[in-house]
Image (tube, rainbow, N blue to C red):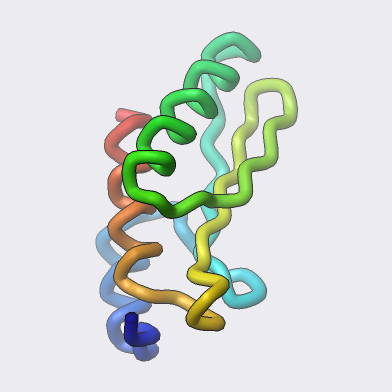
Length: 93
């Protein structure tokens, strides 16, 4: 899978508020209502990620969940990452 170029990454970031590029990944922190909601969100992300065969890094801290996505096999960001990130955004709405 081809790596995204700078304009493709910028287009994704412009249309998905809250996501940012960090250390070769795209990352976003979601703030949920409480711990139980955050754990439920993490479980939902896990289901979506498993179906996509693409697994993000997830950091849970009380009601804050940070998700980071990259395609390790390709050494950077691909369409697979932005597609998963968009699916995760839909879970949070």
